[in-house]
Length: 380
Ligand SMILES: NC(=O)c1ccc[n+]([C@@H]2O[C@H](COP(=O)([O-])OP(=O)(O)OC[C@H]3O[C@@H](n4cnc5c(N)ncnc54)[C@H](O)[C@@H]3O)[C@@H](O)[C@H]2O)c1
Ligand SMILES: O=C(O)C(=O)C[C@]1(C(=O)O)C=C[C@@H](O)C=C1
Image (spheres, rainbow, N blue to C red):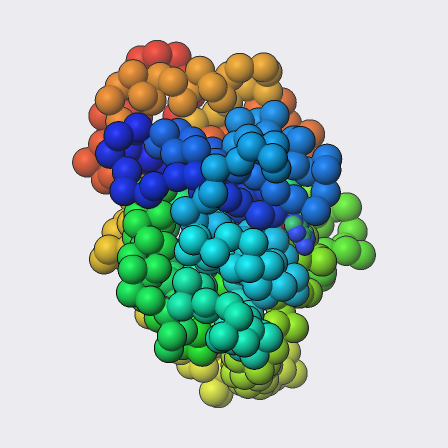
């Protein structure tokens, strides 16, 4: 795995950084910045959330009477309260650059610019942003310092953002291992409707089909179902706020999906009625799957470069404490970089399947090495 930070001394961000909203995103940022030697001040509307983030090492809770002025304030609250928090931060910290990490950008930008009177508030210090990094769990307990490593971080200046403020947010993103990408707010919102909000809803809809499914069917679930439903476990409150914030672009991509669904139903209904050899049934289905092949090929590799295929090495892991940690440690001892990891548990089995993604050249030697070390390696 890639280290999130470059260690103390190699970062450009001048602290302290104040993080408002110490949940998954805020605490992960705090952990990454502190790992890089940057001072982090935490704030949260929930005293318990704040204490948890502090206890996990994401930052300090400064004494208001004795606090150094932050150079950057990062608002990591839910999107519906982000604009108000940005405005309050611009007022409370007149020397600071202020950014937010909310998943939608245009409504927040509009609210900040509309609410602010330029005479009393310097909105040139506000630059919206959005790290394309996260997970299906909320709160500081799910945070980790590597969250941003290798992921795009969208920098979304408004027309009046000062270039030195843009640079400060870019530097912050780069300091936690992200790749900064500059975009306008609407361009960003259209893009995430397709690459983030549509997948969330697709996963949600597929998982919803499981709610009343028979236990016997669920017991057969394999990696395919797990691959497409991981993010269906996301926080309903956060996601409903994201979706209403980006309603028009999300509705537009959902309508396209509905058209695709209707086109799939036609050959299926024909086959169901006239049998699998019915004229005009197989062709459209093959075309639909082939179109998906072309789409998936276009998803960039995890470091934002060209798509790159990894090879999978699959090992059986006994369901006992420490077994997975031992396997991963041994992969490291073999000098192999773990590109990704999926765990599969079969109902009623006392073993799990650990699917380890590695560079293709490393797969064969790793399989042999793991077998030598006593692991049972199975065909992927
Ligand atoms: N979860 C993801 O995968 C992800 C990824 C990228 C960006 N984001 C964005 O990051 C932001 C935070 O998401 P999260 O997943 O960390 O949520 P979270 O629920 O884990 O954390 C949000 C925190 O904000 C606090 N909070 C709420 N209102 C507040 C207020 N008015 N002032 C101060 N604190 C307040 C909450 O108590 C909570 O601790 C959201 O805007 C979200 O759209 C989330
Ligand atoms: O990996 C995940 O769990 C995510 O879904 C993270 C994800 C995404 O869609 O990529 C989700 C929402 C955020 O706004 C940014 C990142």
